[in-house]
Amino acid sequence: MVGAQLRRTLARAFSSSSISPFFHGIHVFQCPDSVGIVARLSECIASKGGNIHCVDVFVPEDKQIFYSRSEFAFDSTRWPRDVLESDFQKIAKHFNAERSIVRVPDLDPRYKIAVLASKQDHCLVDLLHRWQEGRLPVDISCIISNHPRTSNTHVIRFLERHGIPYHYLPTAPGNKREQEMLELVEDTDFLVLARYMQILSGGFLQAYGKDIINIHHGLLPSFKGGNPSRQAFEAGVKLIGATSHFVTEGLDAGPIIEQMVERVSHKDNLTSFVMKSENLEKQCLSQAIKSYCELRVLPYENRKTVVF
Image 1 (tube, rainbow, N blue to C red):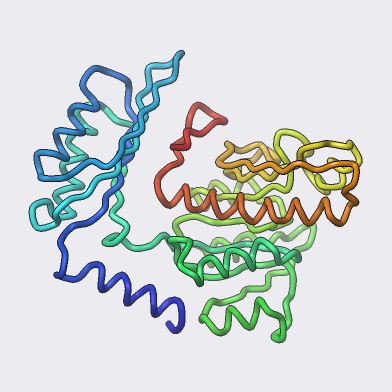
Image 2 (spheres, rainbow, N blue to C red; image 1 turned 90 degrees about the vertical axis):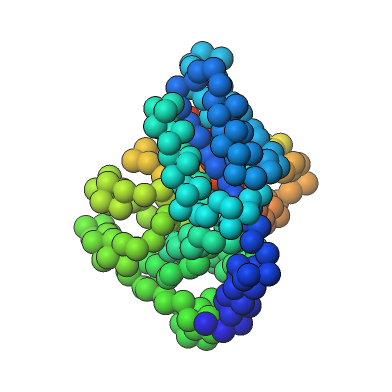
């Protein structure tokens, strides 16, 4: 625990000290739509001396489902963390809520993730540097790859410096090493595929049972599968993109979390095309992780998301 990790630990300890009992809370809610939901949530926060900073609400035109995300400040001496949780659960029970999640970033443990990567480094390196700078609210438990990296590479030196294990699990057509992977990621909160070029089986997804975020180097639903940058280049597109989505059994078909685009032209060659695409991938993946950790992403129908 040195460097960036130590600085973050000290910062969190300082922010959680007795100097100030005020904290920032986030609450997301999903339930059948009915009259009085916003009023009840607001009353809950205000009655304990909390101050609402913002509220986002969404109700689809064709479905009576209520989605909301609230940010609020509260005094932990008046509203302890466990009581806060209990109060929102009472509201969830009253409205028969499908989802009611509370997060207090300065009190709750950081999300623990594992990152899966293959040969290409750009997304992995970008995530590591953002994590080091404290721009991603996660703890990285390990890196898993089907590609070897020697001890003199930038990635391995970085991981060794910060005490993050690197697990090399070479795969073969009949052996994706998924059981070993499941053992390594058992204690994580979610997984990130940073250009991991292996398809995870339905058995793995079911056994893991938690969310997995992937980055696709293309603007889905176009150009699925391998070499989407070349596919887009050869199609002569004028906009390229990157898509971050949840992993499902369908190839590149999971609910979309984030998409980013950039204009290209006939002046771009394949090299500049790929460079622009990789920059989009890095930004898109990091934004998806950040949105997920800030409870901005909610499932909507079977293949969609609400992103507040």
